[in-house]
Image (cartoon, rainbow over all chains, first blue to last red):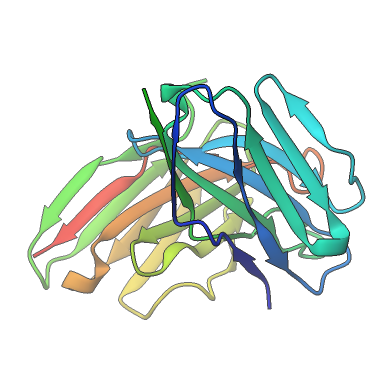
Length: 118
Length: 115
């Protein structure tokens, strides 16, 4: 069985502070993918990043960075110099690798509601 | 491309009525997913299709729920009869098997309220 745990239900930080959102996962698959999605107040789900289980390099995209550590089954997300527009619910997700189809059958965490205070 | 289009955006219906949610995936995508989001259970996969064929419907809660994909550009999720506990946001997503596990693109969701 697959599981994604986002222990932080809600986080509030003052604008320009850095913030890290935690994600811990469980899977028996040797091949899998991890994702982060953003859900702004408007409600849609916006894709942020995909990382496969063979690539443990950290990734940086502008103010966003991701730390994947297979040894601790974690895929944490850091926002540097946070802005009010970063306020949203952030979901970590794990894809179940289904042979032949191989596409994401996503298992989502419960999300972290991030509020950036001006 | 306009992205994944879902209709209606909001639906309020009375218990016992039939509800049909609609989805138009991104052109060229060969996977289509239906997810449900509730406060209690978060985001759950209900069913997904590959090339219009249902592949896994193990997430469909019960027989009152059914989904179809008559062609590559249209899918429906039907609830008959609806119950208050079906109130949720229903998301449709599509993706392309260009490489394994490419990201899914989500529609804006349909907020269903059953009273």
